[in-house]
Image: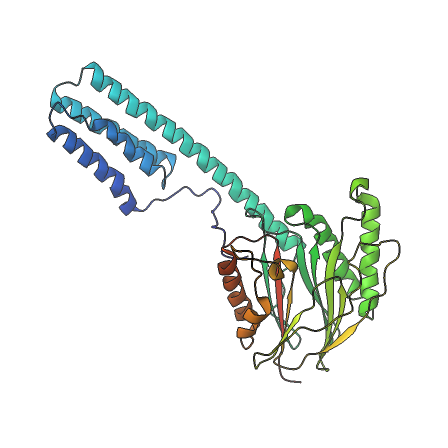
Length: 369
């Protein structure tokens, strides 16, 4: 996951810095002293309510309540020093600060409860991500792999983009896909396709057969669970790759998915022309013919697979992210460093606002037998 969301530890109370707590305490001391020294015609003690209000910004309800009690004590000291502790004005001011502090403490407690609920929801989402989309290994035979996932929805950890890899004899098979839609509503199709790929990748000799098997799995699921109102609207674009250990090539079958970038060690970038079939699930009654394209993939080359969320990302003026040009700058980096650079650059370009889920997969062939 990208560094866009701050993680909250479940059940952990807020632990304010002692230096931050000195600010409201100093305010109480200064306001009380100023009220005492200003004479009977200038009343500054009602400003003491600022202290618990400020504390609620960075501390929990107990600390906020303690600072509120100090504010009430400051009001009492000010009234006692002026000799009007029993007057109606001082009584009303003390009661007002106490009531306002109580309201602030209640709001602070509600806020912290919502924060705990949100942290639990994020924890469940993270667990779902690891169950549905397993982390990829850093090496797969002679290949180095790195992956990146950024969900478009702020509170989601996973959505409609997916990737997976499998090792079959002396060959690596990889899939990247993009479910129609984004965020959690698209998770069902993503889980279906990932499960089907992990099983079918070891059972079919060619990529075209593998793509046909994924079509059949999607057809069975949609026939049973797709609502009539969404007929023909639930599909997945996918890119299937087969990379043999002993040949400097990569076999690719595209099901309506953008072609990968081929980055050379000299920072050259190539965008190959593929022969795509329709996306998986578009025509479940008559699966199309899946053409297998063969691309050169030499040692030290990097295949950069991506979803539409990268290619269609825009800046504040609506200009598309120049993905190929930016990625070529870091072609000589390791897969992990390459994706780290792309992630930082993409988020800076879009101002941290993604319109669609983003998945990136970098594959480098290492030299050697």
